[in-house]
Length: 388
Ligand SMILES: Nc1ncnc2c1ncn2[C@@H]1O[C@H](COP(=O)(O)OP(=O)(O)OP(=O)(O)O)[C@@H](O)[C@H]1O
Ligand SMILES: [Mg+2]
Image 1 (cartoon, rainbow, N blue to C red):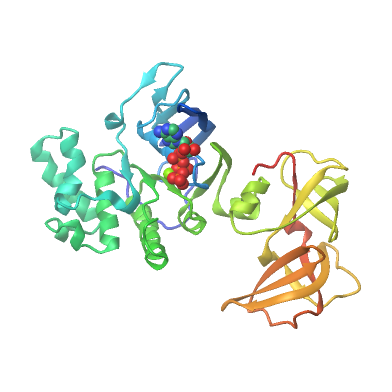
Image 2: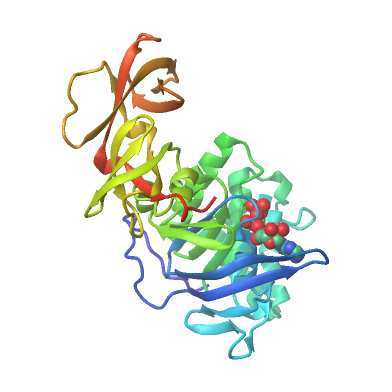
């Protein structure tokens, strides 16, 4: 392997250099006897050198299909895939490079190591498969194992290794014969929560020190937020939004993304007036002001007003609302201690508004109270445009 070494843990400059992967307008349909399903619908995505991109979305949204299309295990009907600037799949140009010639590594659920082979043989497998001369295999495997810190364990069998060591074998195997691109399909999904958290931290560290590009599929949002340079949120075969974890979390582009990442309170209502990117919305819990995230919104339109529990504060009712805040009055229904945080739930008519506060004080239940949330943290989405 001749991969660039990076030791920096600072955020990487995204988009510099030729992308490792470029996906352009990819569409993939599956036809069965009873139905035709569009698994990928005009998907475009770039992965920069050494960039870690996470594909996040619910079951059936097309994550594995996109990964398999890049690997050459599915043949898309239209669109193009380029690896290091070279087209490997293009229906228009009649280009099709088979999987074994795409020089990328895959890591599957539970790593899929071969239990009957030694660690050394597991890592050697892709090289033997690619017809690498036998004299070249041992030094390349030794080097790959050394890079992940497993040089002493080549003779062990995978069953004798810890979860972290198995992950490193899977990484060494994925990187040994490739140009430094690894596709991961939910490698940690079969593990319990604590082990998963530890292994994902180790994976992030390894990715930074070894320097490879990754496309990583998960439906675990904590994993996505922890690992990704950028997250692509998928919805029914489309990419709903792509951005840094902060952009996705703090500025969700659609109602679907706001709801899928983190949790959000939602109150529906009708727009009274709009000015610049702010709308005043009449709702059953009172007038709320929010920021429009995408597209044009007009008075009279039905919208969803959304805000996150941790952006809310809860307190006694006061006569006036400071500018820049929305205020919802109600009765405090629950005050639940959750260790580091406390959840308060306010009932405002038919609506429950959830708030979360670090170290928040307990409050008297069944008492009148008010929730405030900054206008800048309140989002307005058109209902008719919203997916899901
Ligand atoms: N070989 C196939 N034949 C027919 N339909 C398929 C095939 N492979 C996938 N699909 C359909 O395409 C859609 C996307 O599947 P895909 O496996 O990409 O989803 P996913 O996002 O990886 O889901 P999960 O999180 O459950 O793994 C699903 O509706 C699935 O049923
Ligand atoms: Mg899948």
